[in-house]
Length: 289
Image (cartoon, rainbow, N blue to C red; front, side, top):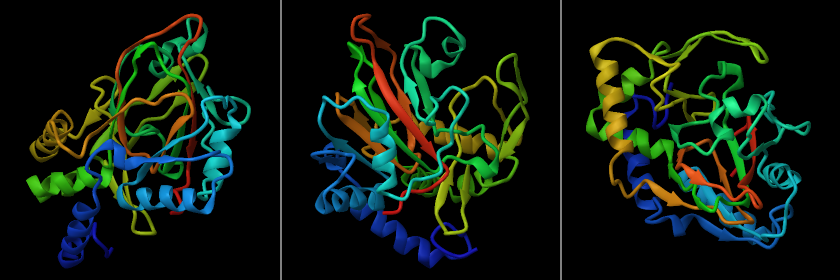
């Protein structure tokens, strides 16, 4: 393997590191692009979103608050080469998930469909290697009455800062048995086999992918000193006041376009008359930016 994420190619990594830090957004405002219609971007709107994704793997668009259609996520994604939806069994018929509080039925047992906080994670960390989530669109129809904010962090920047702390942290988190998701048996979902894999990996195109959750249940870390030290260092980074952690609150018509960056969600209070609603489309493709 060669490229900035190969330990054998230190010079390339240092050049990439310098470029990455120089182009890093200084605040969440640097991620935002106003668009007329996310379903049909103008060339300048597309270029502005693509530029942000190239620099930090994510962009936030601000569109019309009147739009309420899952097609928004699919049409926006298609403009960036996102075609292969990972339609989990809780998604709608079109493969897009409507994320809101569910007071009954199966969804109420899954934390995205509650008002509880969600710890730092990347989506699909429990998926097998052939179904890793590479790209994602999250579109806000209605925010919560209060709370529900997100923290966002470019996974490449997390890797860079972790490597600055100790290169060994990144090396051990690239082990194929670093993180294990145990087998899960669900009456509705059936059996989800145990899934072991790395936290950081590099795809055939040389792109860095991250598979992570800060959950302490339903996850088993490799029990050696080096791995546990690396996990602790990553947890410390994500709980820090790093300027590379961005705080966002999506308003109606706003959305996140990203290469499955690290993110979390704060707890929130809902309004029964106007409950929180977001559309989420998850893809096996990376954004073509």
